[in-house]
Image 1: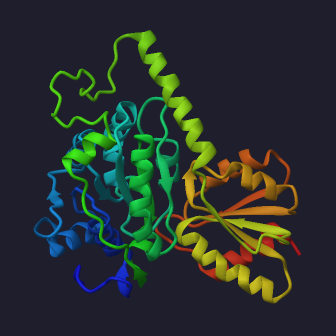
Image 2: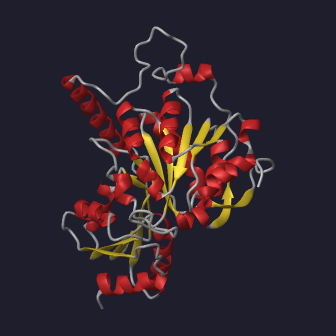
Image 3: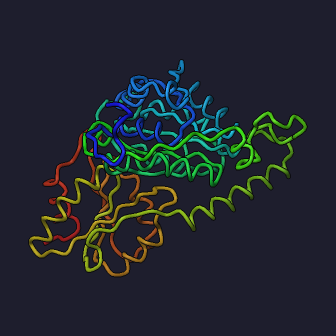
Length: 366
C-alpha cells in the first residue's frame, strides 16, 4: 500500500485506508486525529504513507479529540484543507468544536466511523450517530452537511466531495461511515494526485482566510462569539439563508428499482448494502420492492421521499439503530403512506434474511 503506481488502477483497500489515501491524493493540507476503534487505520495509514515527505501534508496525532477538532478549526481558518477522524464517543467530544466552526463559518471535514453506544458502548458497527450528526450535538441553530458512504469507493470519493462542499459553503462536513464500511475491503479507484494550494492561491480564492498577508484587515478574527444581540441575530439569519441554499442545491441520493415499486425500503450506508440483497430476492419472486438510499443525510432528500410516498403502499426505514432516520421519513411523507422501522442495536448487524422478514411482516403483511 504505497502512493506510487496507482494511477488508473484498482487497488484493494479497507474503507479507512481509502479515506487516508484519498486525502493525500486530493491535496489535503493536514490531518489531526486520535486513535479509537474502528477508525484507527486512518491515522495509521497516513503515518505509514508519510505524506509530509511527498506532498507536504501535515499528519499529527493530537493529545485528544478535543485538541484534534480545535486544530481543524485553526487550520480551516487559514484556508487550508484540514480534516480529522474518530468514532462515535470521540465525535461526541468534538461537538463543541464543530458548532464553533459552524458559527464562525470555518470549513473542515470530520470522518465518523460509527460504533455502538450509548457511551463507550462497543467497538462493533452501528448507525446510532444519525441524530448526533444531522441534528447537531452542539448548541445553537446550525447545520452540518452529512455524507453517508455505502462502499469503499465512496469512502475515497467523498473526501474530495466533502472538502468541495466545506469550502463552497464555509461549513463543516461530516463523512458518516460505520465500522462495516471502515473495516471491509473492496477494490477502489483512487483519485488522481492534485497539488496542494499555494499561499497565493489561498489568498486569491478565499479572501476571508487568515493568511497573515494583510495585517490591516479586521476580519481575520474567527469566532462564534458576539455580544451584540442584534448583530448576532443578523449573523444567524445569514446562516439560515445559507442552509436553505444547501438544502435546495446539494441533496444526493440513489434509487434502485423504485420506478414501479409498491414498497420502498429506505436505508443509508452499510444498511443499504444489506437491504439491497433482500430487495433483489423479492424481485425474483415478482414482488415489487425498491430501495431508496439517502447519500446526504443533511440535507435530507425530503422532496424525493415525499414523491415516492404518493405511489407506494408503504415504506420501511432500515437502520442499524433504534430508529432515528425514520423520524425524518415520517416528516417527509406527511402521512401519505405508512412508515415502519426495523433495526438492530448494540453493534448487532441485521442479516438480509432478517430484513426480508421485516419487509414481509411490516410492509407486505401477506
